[in-house]
Amino acid sequence: MPRRSPSPTSRPYHHGDLRATLLKSAERTLREKGAGALSLRELARDIGVSHAAPGRHFKDKQALLDALALDGYERLHQALTTAAGHPDRDFEEQMTALARAYLGFAVENPELLELMFARKRDPDSSAQLAGAVDRSLGSLTRMFTAAQERGEIIQGDPEHITTVAAASLHGLAALIASCALDAEAALDGLDEHVHLLLYGLKPR
Image (cartoon, rainbow, N blue to C red; front, side):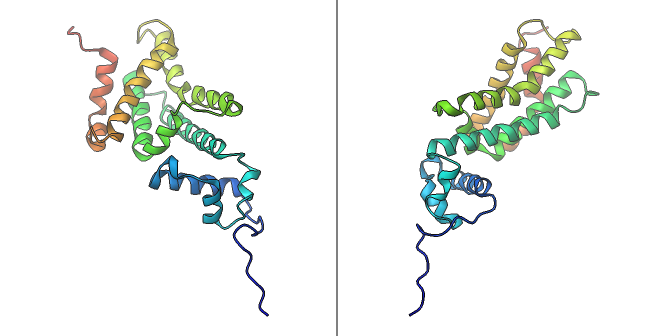
């Protein structure tokens, strides 16, 4: 009698890096179907491990969502840090480079960005996520602080200035995500957007 193949629920745990594989598969599902379609059992089935195997890394779906958000913030941090790595640029050029990095990330990852800003968090992950948010926005805050020291922008709490700038950029991202604004047009007009953000609308 031929041996029966193991059922999906009895397949052994065999992935070398199951956590990374789960996150990659989860992000693909997030892009294609949305967060509501995510299921640890379905992800296990998709990548060919037992349905219990994901529990080694994520206690539940919320833990998986938090991990996806954390990964998103780390990638955003890398993009902003790379954009900020040109101290020879003047302040407006630096700001435009950071804005382009942020908006580029938003255009490429709209579903992930929405998840990153979702309010529901596992208490066990909240501190880690708060730290990731601080790191991802740290490039902006450091840039504003340095510009204040050089007398290029007004004095004031640099974190508050960062909030204003981030809100403006995230607003553009939200308009693109809702199809109220064309992504290419937004990127093409980003220089003017940053100029208006820095200098305001009041005639001089």
